[in-house]
Image (cartoon, rainbow, N blue to C red; front, side):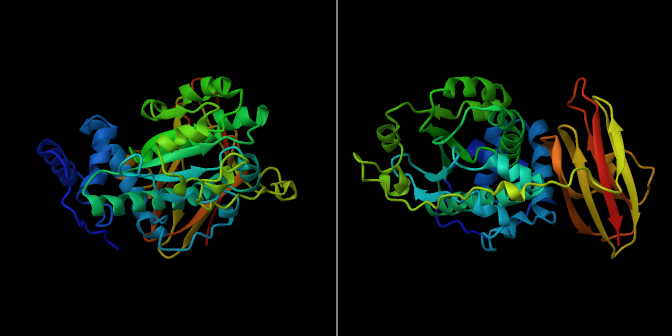
Length: 382
């Protein structure tokens, strides 16, 4: 439901004008739930008020919100995705010592990201994650409606338990980089800062690898605390919203009850190898291509994909199967600008076809310089 403003938004006149201009530009796509001054202001600030950059990105996000993922309403459901046991929720409450900020605790060091990626399709991982991102956005929007001031998330990353190995390096350059770019693309300026605590001795090595992979605005929001982190963090947030598992012999002040995430049993890792009865499309570096499927209204379209590298993809509808310009097609599935590969666990979805005609899967390898992308796919219409 709509979150109504209880306090008048404290926004400058010039910002109000820009917000109004942006609102008019996306009036056909924006939903009532998402249409708040502060949500639009985040896009303006995050992209330096550059409308040429903002409008296509915001339109893409608004289409994503209205897709089958239904972002406006997803948080009305219980938090019960299979993956949620392994990636726990971390919203604990208001920081207070940093104004207008809500704390989220991420168990970065102990979350079994490798196990999750070896077991579940990455789109399911994204879906589980989107639930939490939407919950953060909802809390931020509620706070803004109460105070009339822009709010954000203080994102605390607890690195305790991190091991320096090949798996970690693969995660940093692959899936975690992909998830963080997805986050910064769709949840612009929602995070106030990323605070890294319990950092291992090899943090500078890791940071030198991760840093260039992060969007610049994200990079500038990272603070890494040293060995005195238990005290340092108290300058940012009250102990009531910090996890009780930080208490030790010397400290008993942290009060938040944050559930610990479970590890995945390697017996559940995906072991079926390549997709059976599948087709293959090969896409040269710097290129994109389509796979076109004809379907009738009322049928369901189901797909599974594996691939050997990073790629972008989406699904469009058009009456004309020869159409190659996505701008003149109807988007029927979110555009994912960077899915980190290789994809071993087949990822896919099922959608209901609302119209008869051509459904065109768009696969892009446009970001690659040299790497040839091979996508194995299985698509069924029933």
